[in-house]
Length: 404
Image (spheres, rainbow, N blue to C red):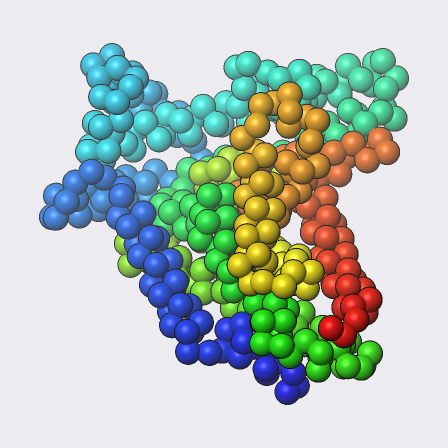
C-alpha cells in the first residue's frame, strides 16, 4: 500500500496535479455550459421565451407519429424552404424561430419513421435497411437456398433487432443531445485522452530523473511490487480524471439547460443514435457510455504506462503517447481507399475505442467465420486484449532491465 500511495501522490494526489484537476473540471463544466446555451441565437428574455415555447411543443407532441401533425409540419417546412432556401438563410431562421425549429424536426422525425419501414431513399445494397426491404432480402436468400450464409445471418439479426426496438417515437431529449456531445471523438481525444497522456508521463520516468531507478530495480520482488503499484495508480488516475470529465460535463449541461426530460425515452430519440441497435433507454445508454469511457481511459492508461516504462524522459513519454493517440485518431480522416487497407487501425485505435457515439450509434458488424460480430463487442474484445498486452509487456520490460 505504501508504494501505491507513493505512486498516487506522484501522479495525482499532489498540490500541482490537484490544482490542475480542479482547473480541468472548471473547463469541462464551462465548455458544456456554453454548448447547452446554444439552442437559439437569441439572448435574454427573448431567448428564454423561445426555449420555453420550443420545449412545450416537443412535450406536447411526444409519442408515436401523428400523421396530421406530420402533414402540417411538412407544409410549414416546405414553405420555409421555398422562402429562405436550404442554406444559411434557412439555418439562421430555424435558430431564431422555435415553432419553425419544431416543425422541421417533426418533419425529419416523419422521415425516420418512413425509413424504419421502407429503408432510405437510396438503399445501400451492401447494407440493407428497413423492415420491408430486410424481409424481401431474407425471402430472396431463402429462395436461393442461402440460409447458411453470412448475409442471411446478418439480415436475420438486424430484422429481429428492428422489430424488437420498434417504430421511432418523438421525444424531448434536448438535455441528453447536448450531454452526448461530450462523447464526440474530438472532445474525447483533446479534452480527456490528451490530458490523461500528460498525467501518465512521469509514471516510470520520474524515478530515472531522480536517480531512484537503481533502488527500485535492486530485487525481483521489488520490481514486481512497484510495477503493480504503478499500474494500479495509473488505472485509478484514469478513472478519477474521466469521472471529473463526465461529472463536469453533466453539471455544465444542467446549468445551461436544466430540463432532464427524456431520460427514460427510447435511445433512438437521441441525435446520432437514430439507427442504434442497442435496446436501451437514453438513461441506460448514459450509464453504458460512462462505464465504457472509464474503461477505455483505463485501457489507454495501461498503454501509457508501458510507454513510460520504456523511456527515460517525461517529455518523451508524453510526446510518444500523444503521437500514438493523434495518429490513430487522424486515420479516421483518410480517404475511403486508405481506410479499407488499414481498417484495424481506423476502427480500433485508442481514440476510436473511446467513441461511444461511433461504436453504438448505428449497427455495424464484422464477418467472423461467417457470423456477424457487432462493432461494440469487437471493440470490447480488442480493448481488453490491448490493455492485457500492455500490462504484460510492462512487467516483462521491467523484468529484463538491469541496474544502471
